Length: 227
Ligand SMILES: C[S@@+](CC[C@H](N)C(=O)[O-])C[C@H]1O[C@@H](n2cnc3c(N)ncnc32)[C@H](O)[C@@H]1O
Image 1 (cartoon, rainbow, N blue to C red):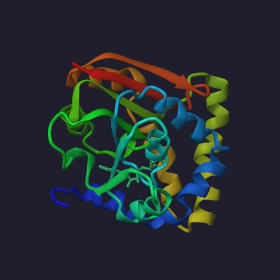
Image 2 (spheres, rainbow, N blue to C red):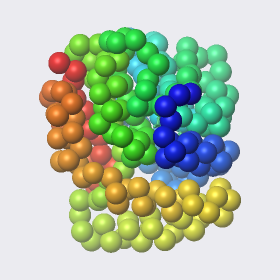
Image 3 (cartoon, rainbow, N blue to C red):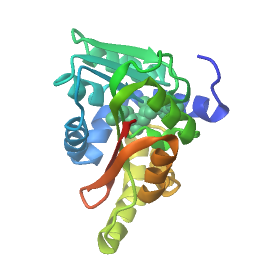
């Protein structure tokens, strides 16, 4: 892979190191709600093809493939893709190791681009959004599923305790990685708020841009159409 920033490399290494425990921790720590969120995001997809960016261990790609015939997953971390590869065995899902900021695909080839819990990790979000737009066909849809800050204050306090104290503690014990699960609350804190992400999508040229909260705004879906 070319043109990887130091930050990209560090993130790829971190995800490769937690790849063996990623799926089980994800589902335990979210009480399986992550599966419902991916289903909801995938329900917006239409057409025959989808690119799942930051596919990781392929959960969104597998969900997308239930309704979309041609699915390709792309991720920076070879370690995450290795685990994904076992899960997609026998399915028509392609996997590519590459960065979201530099997608190795021709212009206007996908009906959909989806990215689930990945955009938070991308240092240059604007470049990635331009890449998503470039590979989408005209009229194609971008769907972004990502954590954000909960919208209700009382719930937010409870969730902050969970995500900044309990989750890093349990994550560290199970994944045996000191930093990865402290990185989650930190990266959510530094992630643009929903209005800002919406304005970034509009600036890049997406139309019909909207967002919707999931489970009190722990996560949000953002979506827009390539004009
Ligand atoms: C939290 S995981 C999400 C995985 C999967 N989409 C899911 O729903 O569980 C984030 C993934 O983003 C990948 N990633 C981070 N930065 C990336 C980038 N710049 N380009 C492509 N993938 C990236 C990581 O390697 C990791 O697999």
